[in-house]
Length: 398
Image (cartoon, rainbow, N blue to C red; front, side, top):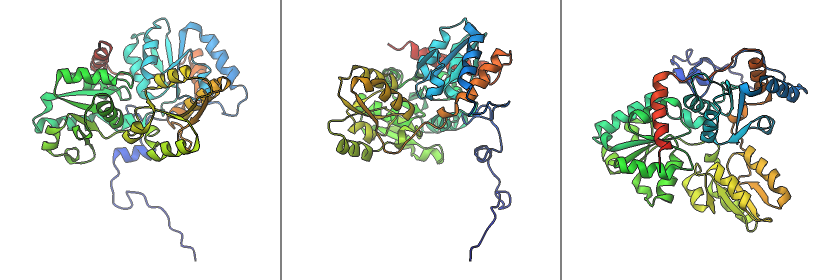
């Protein structure tokens, strides 16, 4: 006999759901959250055969008034309409270099659009085609959690020795915290330079929000030991650390990670080496430390692209980064005889990057062409001021 039960809500069970739980269940909206909110308006059908023509027509109608940015991890159907492609910081700088463009349509995720808004002029309007395109890594560090962490460091008597360094993949709130407390931003390309600078300013670093980039840079590139690093867990009292552990550490790593790069494992590396003779393993530094240690080459998205561009014909590569980019690179270099494969057997797109699809892009472009501003990303003046300070410190790095 089959027993059928009905689901009970948290309230029925006498549990008061938290705002975060309600947000994850889709019952609340938080426009400041990287998780995003629903988009207004009606989207074209994804099966509409005229989507490409509609996007092209709307973009042509807007002319120089619009500048479309496409992150490397975007779908091909979207990338084809990008005026420039690149990683998050390159795209934000490209937007700032186009002051004549009234609209910046950012095909990426929320924190990237925030950075573009911070770096562009007040007359420019940054549009994110789907507000639900957030970033799981950026979600892992909220302003409230980081403020509480700073209180823990203060109670341990070390806050004055700590310099925050925040990865570009963070919300505007976290960038503002970093700027306010004398820190800087980094990318996966300049993380070592940022940490070198930080250790000239203080004795310790609070690295937000990606533990893996912080650990890999400290240990692999700067010669620290794993014992020099401690992991601060915002979901545990005092981060799960004692005051003595905090005082002994050089690198205080936030417990955050990329949901895509965190999937790659040492087994992935070993398996691909057994399966493909002579393969070169090339991974992003957001991967786990054991994966980075076992790889042949490690670097940012731009580094990955340049390494493959310079690779000899006939070489074999297994790439540990987002699948849209890997597939695009495999197609691009196939004619040169370069064999490029995804590091893991499990297909793994960045789910939030993939929220920006052709229907959302068409809807955004057509709305702008009709004079309707939609999905504008705006950072408030105080947050922008401190976040920009942190970004400017990065730009001034030697």
